Image 1: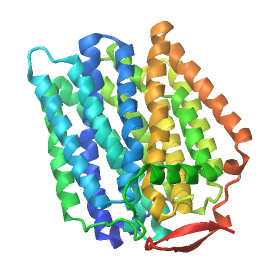
Image 2 (image 1 turned 45 degrees about the vertical axis):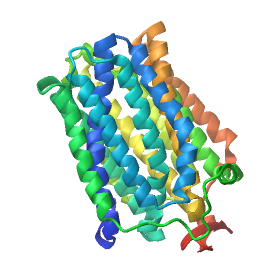
Image 3 (image 1 turned 135 degrees about the horizontal axis):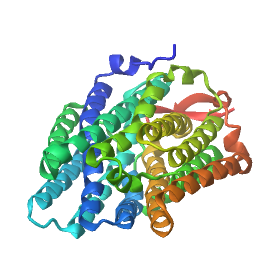
Image 4 (image 1 turned 60 degrees about the horizontal axis):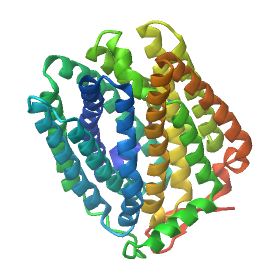
Length: 420
């Protein structure tokens, strides 16, 4: 069947709790992800400054991601997610307070973005490393697809409602909705059982971080997932331009549709992703998906009118969801549990560097040329870069899941994949 497999939700209580908590809190996060660039653009009228939000986030991620990975392999992963979730909520409270003053402070918005990105960098490795501990190994593709459905639901509803909230209720109320969603997320995390570190866990150290990096370097299929995603997002990420585009198409309500459109396509793909369990060449799947993303971005930049633009953004989102499902399957098939946190931090860097630098690049090119040229040229470079990766990364391109078999992961209580 093509429909998404909900078996992990039916079988595993803690997976259900994590799914519900993340669904609600991510919904609020996506509301804020629209409100922040909108507020920055309203205060500065600069697409360059909106693009620099990505650089601020990237700086925090570069500093804290590897530490987050080391902590994920040495501490209770559920507790790490819970504590950092509380930190993220504190950031939303700061944004609320700043929006209530007569003259909101621009630098404080950037400081809060850096704070929240730091907590996110500490959280994501533990969050990603949780998944294989909550479901059976044969349920990982279904769990990845459900995660994509959850994320895309938040990315559809969050931006759409954000546009309405900003226009009707104002920025303070918009930020407060995000704060309320964190309360639900924290409650679900508190109800989950502990997820202790692997039996062979050691204290976080530079040596442990280096071990993770060395493992990633030794696996060409992992390197391929990082490189292709960075290439696609670096050149084909136009979201920093959405506030400026929306100004000419109807204001903040249109802005919400622009942010939500990719998620509509991603949801459509995830909800019909049952067929992906029959795919074994996941590397080729990632390359094809990233190339389709670039082609859709070109279409978005070329077509006139809002409706056609939203259609191409939806197609781009479907391609991105396809890439994400195949990348996650490769990661979960090739990484032992004792290294999942540290490898998740490297994954975080790979899929954060591309979009954040891509948004900055889009803002710079648009400020020097035009918005349309920035979008179309980025899509063209994305397609060219993905095709180059197909030739330059043969081990990744030819990755075949059937060449791996399950074997015990000594000391971790989980499993790992060994090459035949």
